[in-house]
Length: 145
Figure 1 (tube, one colour):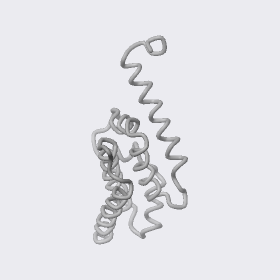
Figure 2: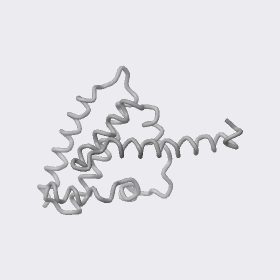
Figure 3: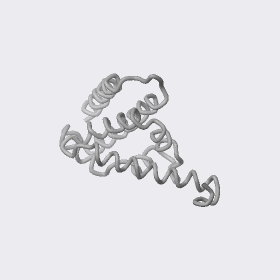
Figure 4: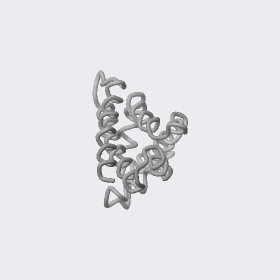
């Protein structure tokens, strides 16, 4: 290992970089552009079930320069998603971003649960929870309009 990486920190960094690329490739392969919002959430859930170790690495590696949820959202979210949500649900861009951030937080938390439980919670149960959370978050966004 040390012939490729000079230290344990180098091993971690290389593993994180390769994991990030794996997740990006996985998402590209599993996201339906016609159903961007839902398919992205489901792709994260499948990733957590299929590759729990990589999921844990991806969602626990340090992201530098993040001091707020807004900064995290700006750094990790797909910039096209807010516009997609505005058009799909007829809500303001501000509410669309809030909905998206809430679902990112909830989906990543659900993925973490899936990645650490054995024999494991079913994907169907996880999807059901995502739908319930989505309904609550969307209703809140619409009430505040």
